[in-house]
Image (cartoon, rainbow, N blue to C red; front, side, top):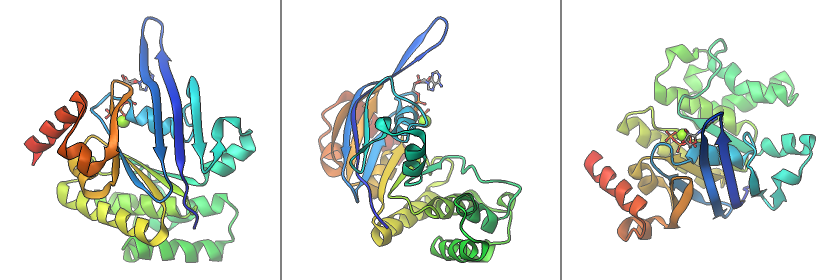
Length: 252
Ligand SMILES: Nc1ncnc2c1ncn2[C@@H]1O[C@H](COP(=O)(O)OP(=O)(O)OP(=O)(O)O)[C@@H](O)[C@H]1O
Ligand SMILES: [Mg+2]
């Protein structure tokens, strides 16, 4: 499986409605090398989800560049973009599983869309369920699973497309600390065995501390500081980072 770098250059995004404008991203630049576990941390409303949606062009930035594995996403045509997006996996806070399908069918779904033959997709899906520790739940439906188990299914499903990069938007925010730890451990294992670049979007310092090597602090749509996790946590330079650190201490 290939791993992918991602480069964000001078990204701007403003949401306009009749009588208001929100500058959700203001000149955001980030360089995430391949094979990194990179954190983006910020308070609610900082622009984290907007940034992650711009990373795969679910949202089109007003200006700036998104370069994935050397490819300028904004320069691609529709077909090229569709192919490129297959390399970008995303998991969310609320899992987004298909409730009417069982676990195995959920993981098979992206393979079906890609036209993989039935037998092959079942093999691959079972293999992925094994990897996330849920092979025994293949026949269960999402409503019969715990939050942590649902997120494991979502992870297996996203891996079915062999992504080079995995974007995780508050993937553990709906889970208790214990379950959060098991999901982060799973992401670490995936990172170690498959080498995928992982971007962790979160408002929790503990998550960044546990899994990321580098972190960018986002506040009010702009990157306030960026560096090695140990450095940023030990000697935060920005007000935003200090505020997040104080909040993290209170939680612990
Ligand atoms: N579709 C939209 N239309 C208008 N404004 C939006 C839209 N999406 C986000 N915003 C605004 O942009 C800003 C950034 O929102 P965003 O969802 O990116 O923040 P976030 O950091 O992900 O917050 P949270 O931690 O609560 O998920 C907020 O002020 C939000 O209200
Ligand atoms: Mg968000």
